[in-house]
Every structure is written in C-alpha cells, then in structure tokens.
Length: 506
Ligand code: SF4
Image (cartoon, rainbow, N blue to C red; front, top):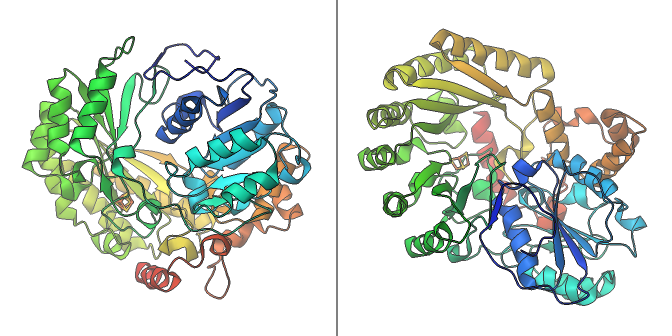
C-alpha cells in the first residue's frame, strides 16, 4: 500500500506501484473526519489517482488526525460540504502550510476539487493554486502529471493546465467551462474498505451520476449531467475483483446514486450481489422508480430500511420546485416496500421553502398521516434540512428566510410530525445560514475564513472585516448583477434558470 500512514480496521482493495525513489510527498486530504472522508468516493478517487501514478509518496490526512506539520510537494483536497472551507484552512494550518496562496509562492501547492468547487469555486481563490470543477476523472490525472513534472513552479503549471476545461488557476486563469462528463465505465468504487466509516466495511460503487429529475434546489442535474449509468458488466467486474480480494472480507455492497432504482439494471445488480453471497445497502430511492419488481428485489435482499425524499407534503409545492412526483407515488412506494418487508422509512424533507404558508404545513400533516397509513406499521421518521440556495441552480436567486421564519417553519413541520405520530430529526438551522454564506460567497469569504481560523475574531466579525454582509443571504440576488460563479463559468443559461426560479416562487 502506497500510504505509509496506518489507520486501524482497513483492508486495501488495490495494489499501487512503489513510488519512484526520491518521489515528493503528496497529501490526499479530506477537510472533515476520517469517518466522513473514507465514506466519500471522490476522496477514494483522489487517493487512488495519486497512489496509482507512482510519482508521489502518498499520505491521507483528515481533520481529526493529530496535527503534524509535513514537508509536502502538494496537498489535494476533496470538498463536499461548504462549511468544510473553514476545516480546509484549519488543516492547512495544522499541516504547517500557509493558507493564503499569495504568501505561499514557493511553498507546497494546494489543489482543491469536489462538488463545492463545481458549484462555486470563488471563495477558494485566495487559498488554492489549482481548482478543479466538474467531474475529475478527466482532469485529475493531468494535474497529477503536471505537478509531478513541474513541482511548485506556478507559471509552468499554469502554462500546462490553464486551458484545460474544468481547471481554474487563481491569479493565472479564472474562467473555465465545467469539465466534460465522463464515460460511466470510469465511475468510482471504494479502493480501501474501512470499518470506522458511515458505511462500515462496505464496498461502495457509484452506479450512476447526475439525476433524471430536475429539482430546482439541486445541483445533481445542473452540474452533473446528463444522467449516466454504469454498465452492468462493469459493475459485475468490480464485484468479482473486490469481493474476492485478498484480505477484503466484505460481502456488503453500497450502491451510490442520486436515484439508485432509476438504473435500468437495478434488479440485475441486486441479483449479481446476491449471487456472490453479498448484501446490499442503498442510498435514497425516488418514489416514482418503485414498482412491484423493484420492491420485490429489495425484499429479496432483506433490505429493511429505505429513504425517500418528498421534500414537502404539498404536492403543488413539490411540482413548483420541479419535483414532479405525486403524493400517490409516495404512498404507493410505501405500500409496495412495506409488503416486501421494509420496516423503516426515512423521509427527507425541507424547511424554508419559497412561499411556505399555513396551507403547506396542513398539507404536510395530511401527507405524513397518509404515508404512515400506507407504510402499514413500519417505523417512519422525518429528516428535516433547511433549504440552502445553491449556485448554478434555479434557486441561486432566492432570498433565504431569516432565523425567525426558519424557526417557525421547522416548528410547523415538527407539529405535523407529532400529529402524524412520527419522529423528526432536524439538521441545519443556524449552520445552514453559514452554509449559504459560503455557498454563495466570493473571494472575501475565503479571506474571512483565514482571518477567523487565525483566532482573532468571530466568524461574523471576520466576514464583516472582509466586507461581507452576513445578512446578504436574506436578499434576492443576481437579477441585475453578475454572481461570483458566473465570472468563472458564464451565466449558465441564466434566462432558463430565472424562468424556473419564478415558477418555484409560484
Ligand atoms: S430527485 Fe433528488 S437528486 Fe434528483 S434532482 Fe431531485 S433532489 Fe436532486
């Protein structure tokens, strides 16, 4: 294994070449916990690409590692959550690396990719030497080779990488197109099994990318399109090469997708795992994909827990948000899955939707009661998140409700759950505002992160000191201005985004 650092409870699934003698150190870094990072296929891909190149000695680092300064040639971060901007700065400091790019002219390179960069890379401009937007399979190997050849020579790197679609080199080239969609043969799977993760000892396989849906708050279709599915033969070859790998004692396979059951070979995939003596874990299903055959396949694999995402109990609101799934489709899915043996449902819902009023919450209460009835005795639980407007989606223009309105919205869904006799877990609240400030921010937000982590001030004060009004997220934006990410990617079909935004407002 290329990584000289040891973490307990791991089984490598791939062998990598020994690095060349005198090879520089590259860090594959995840700005959150080990457990979250090792559950992230994008992070597995970065590690695999670095180790597979044979051009570096590679170490993984996570936020919860003991802080040890390193002498690395480059650090490659994967950022999946906006608030990990702050953790990225924390990690740079703990690795002994100057976080501000301009003060690091000779030092290690900082390379950052992941969904957050694909959405809005601008807050990372003050920190990163290279930013990778969009799907990384086509761009990361180019970055790895260029960094191995050129070392920390920023100008040489810029002349090799600045015209590659998807790559941004702050200070050299700050406009790009999103990297082209890649062949589904190249979709990711775990390269290390780890016991201390969100999915312990589970082989994760990304069976599709993008989404056939078009919800106006979601990046899945605006950045990762078109919807593509991994061929069944490729899936089977991953099973054959990893389930039987030496030391890899797992029979658990996690199918990763925004819409697992939309894969045309979903039932065959389940059968393929079953035939090899394995069990399956699923990410959330779209209710409209559930029919008798899908439910039966789920039952056959003894899957007892399923997540669905109605977002709201109001069918009219759901449609305005671009989620064209009727209430009846959810009730039907609940009934079919219950009959197939599912005993626990998690419903993902959103608070702070545009135009929420009493009527919406009454409809949500009725929806939940009807769902519970359809679920026929299965345990039902609501997982409530606050809606955060995301760049490059129709809701990028939306004014986020204030703290008071959000609290009222969360409380109303709580009451609806209580009336329906089901539990609720609330995520976000105050942190969703911070998420929005970073998601929708510009370079000043990145500078504020450095100021804040330096420890001399509060986060809000740091934002103000850098000229960011923390309350700007509560105003509609962009109708007469260029948004930060539009400077990088162009307007991304702004006219059609605006049409869909207005439809969401109703
Ligand atoms: S169905 Fe889910 S993943 Fe697909 S666009 Fe809607 S919210 Fe996004």
